[in-house]
Length: 400
Image (cartoon, rainbow, N blue to C red; front, side, top):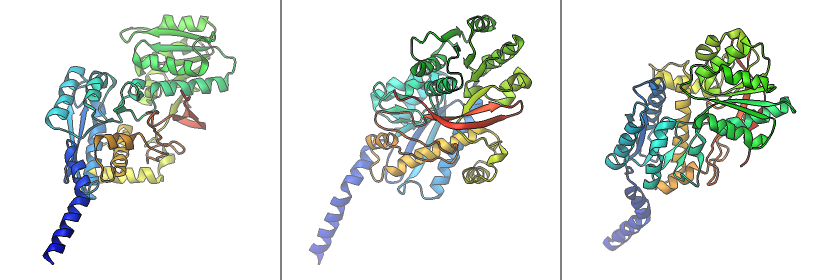
């Protein structure tokens, strides 16, 4: 009888050995927890975005209350980098070398991620769903351990070019772009669709430090542009809307979806000047009455009320934080009993038509080992003088 018990114990130990080894061999993974590292701008000029990380922390608390993932508690370690690249480097090194996190998740900002991405990939630590639309974070050949989540600026540019061509097949396209990675991604996306040598494309750049963009807009108007794409940040989009109205110019005007705030952009530009301007969306707007009875947003509001009662349910940053965290939990659940860093990356890059509660109908997450852009779909929206109204089909970015 004793020998049989020893045999069964030995057999069970051998059966569980691969599972135990896989857990123990991954930094930040034990039988009790999974350590998740994050950096965010809790201070400084971008601190308004920090509510995103607070939502994520609350979401992981909810998951822990439900038993965690594979019986493991999610230990979310989030440090302030103030959106400063030098501080981001310091904090990311701290997370990897001292805290020994299993992965990095939703690290904030283009500049901060640009400063850390090489180091993270050298360390072969999964850097999942970075909070930036820069297309360089969706390049598996250069940065195989890093991927984004939101539509990249390049994908957005592709979709605007498709829409412009559908609306005005022979129209001359003018691009006002910010002369940095942000603006250049849009130009690259537009040229992906229209061609790099298309004579009908006119470009005019500006620096982030410029006080005015009047001369650029005057030049585009003089060139006969009838589709204007303002591939720039909110401050300059507001300037462009005002100047175009002042010139009595009537192009089809398309603006970036980061610059669609009614309070911060359309209002200062003059609501009446924005009528008919087009942009895009991929998230449900929590302030849109049409989503009042939506099941996904009802669940999100119930979550916010219970786990993040101080969070503003009118702030879309709290919805996108919920979507980010929802996605990571799906990835971790798909890992089964293998929480190696390689398998976490594999699951993150094997998303197949995954629905997320905050995404618009028809938009799902899809990735592969060669496609690190989870969202490549957008729906167009038009400003009616008060709010943005979605219309038409779902557009998909170009296949590269």
